[in-house]
Structures are given as structure tokens and as C-alpha cells.
Length: 394
Image (cartoon, rainbow, N blue to C red):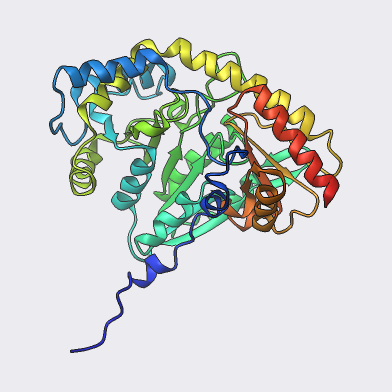
């Protein structure tokens, strides 16, 4: 018998491990730690949403559901998306909606549907690492296209991106508002990318997880490809209940897809998770139908926290930052943070402060630090004081 090592296949072994988790594992359990490394708020899910799940459990909703989600939730999502984004080709229907076990699952299932060995996937970076790593799991080529940082903030070189999206490209992945930078794509760039991808048969995967955490207009809704696309376009929009409705632990998301993909996506959901829990889906319905005030309140809280944190960050010597237009993160340069992983580990040890290293979001993020500002001003103020003391000691 041949001697075989008990290891995963090469593509899996080559995946980058989470640098955020590496820092967190060094600090979890410390009673004095102030943690801002994960992308979640310091408040629990609104009570009316939690109550919907409790009521569903009390009613005995503990069985399997449809692969694509229960119809009441799919209908609620279709109404929500249609109200938020009046598509040029008509309203979004239930046939365009697939419910998933988290936005993360939506990203994986979309990539499973579109990409395989040898396919070329271009991703705008820096970005949450899963977007870059998922294609690699499936044997596809993952190409990073970096945003540019300057005193004006983060910008996209549109013409260079279009040149990168050759006819040999299968899909382009765009997360906007962006984690970690807060960069938000403008409508003119979206139109140019959509027209280019139409000409060359390239899919667009829009990671819209933070579309409701946007500070650039009164509506609190970021520009979306869904505003300008037709249902027949090669476009998939993935979304999640985690961020805007403060439901990170619930693991519930959705996809807006061309109807032609529906049966294939249902099969992939069956092979991945079978279905989302029924009682969690009931909470999702409540969030969409009665949670709009909670979304607006959370958005306003985040904007206030952003302004509070950025003003104090940029008053510290050596800090370089720009004000993010969306999401829930400050992404900044700090003195002696060229090795961002080592810097963040030192902050844990010396200051009891937990931040995320920029290298976690790709090489383009090296030298930067991410701070999740979905927290009270009291906690943010104490965090600033700890960072200031750590910078003084350097």
C-alpha cells in the first residue's frame, strides 16, 4: 500500500489563512482587551427581529425548507430589491431570488456556478479575503486589481480596469461599499463596466453586503449595478442580513440572479447546505418588512461613529487616513506599521487593543490597519487613547 499523507489537496493547502483570526487568537480571553477587529456591531440584533425567530420556533418551524428559500422570504426580498433598485428592465421577481446560509455562502455558490479550472476571475482589491481566495478553491485563476490610495482617498483607475477585463475574463468581482477601505463605486464607472462586460460576455459579481451602510446621500443607499441593469444581464448581486440589520450570527443572505440560473443555483444550495433554517428565514422577513427604521438608526449611528473616530485618528501624529463613504471601517496608515500583522500583534500585547492588519485584505492593504467603528463613542475614545499611548512608546 502506498504511503499517503493525510492532507487536503494542493489548492486548499495553498489558501491564505485569516490574518485577522491570527491576531484575534493572540488576544481572545483577555479581560482588558478592546476589540475592533471583526466586522460586526457591539449591539445585539433588534428585538423585533429576534422575536420573529422565537415565534417561529414556538410554532415548530424546525424542518427542512425549499432549497431557494421559503416563498414568503423570497417574495419579501423581491419587493425590497425592487423598491430599492428600479431595474431598467422591470422589477425583480421571486424567480430572481435565492436565499442562502449567509452572504459568504452566496459568494461561494455564485463562484461554483460560474467558475472552474482555468477560468479568469478579476477582483477589485484590497478586499475581504474570501473574494480572492474562493476562485482558487475551484481551480480558477484569481487576478487582483488594486485601488489606489492618496490624500483624496481610495480611487479606481477605470480605464486600466477595463483593459484588464479582457475577453478571456470570466467574471469581475466588485465589493462596494468596500471592506476594508470604505470606497464606493460611482454610477458612471458602473455604467462603463456594465457596457464593457456586456460586449465581452463577462459576468459581474456585485458583493452588496454594505449597500445600506452608505453615507453619501440622504437615502443611505449606495449606487448599485441593480439600478442600471436588465434582469437578463450577466449580473449576480449577493447580499446579507448580517450588516444593515445587525444579524451577523444568524447566517442568512440572498442572491439576485438571472432566472436562467435559478435551477442550477438550487442544485448547488442542495449540495452545499440544503436550505436555510426556517425560523431564521422568518426573522429575515421581519427584518425586511418592519426593520427599516432600525436600518436608518444604525446607519446614523455609524456615520456619527465614523466622524468621531476619523477626527481623532487623523489628529494623531503620523496617521494617514481618508474618510470612508460607506461600510463600517476606518482603514489607515500608522507609523511603524509596514508589517501590519506584527504591528497589530504588538497592539494586543502592549495596549490591549485589537485591530485588523491590512495584509489580511491582500498585499495592497499592507501598511494599513482596519478599525471597525460599529461601536459606542465611549469604546472608540478608549481605543484611541490606547493607540496614542502605543504610538508614543514605539
